[in-house]
Image 1: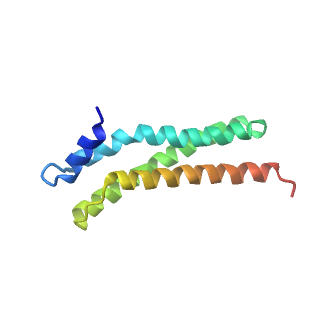
Image 2: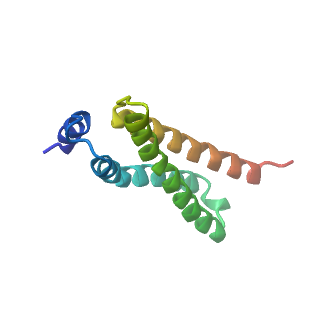
Length: 121
């Protein structure tokens, strides 16, 4: 059964929307976020496999922690709009905008890093 319909109904119904329900909604989506951003990083490392050094794997794990901290900004933005500005934004919209931005940023960061290693200056 698709939980997103139920989640969206609960989040859009002001009587049942609480800080905790919003937080839980975002935490359910964290796995999809981590897998998607992780795949984009692994993809770039596979493309540039002959240039990858062991310490760069540690850097990739640190990048994963940084992106998870950035992920939490979605919760903060969602709560801020709902409770301080009284504006309901579909959390799926915020999630997918953040996901696309994180994937593109990861790809571009890795591309710039590995291209700078491979180019002859």
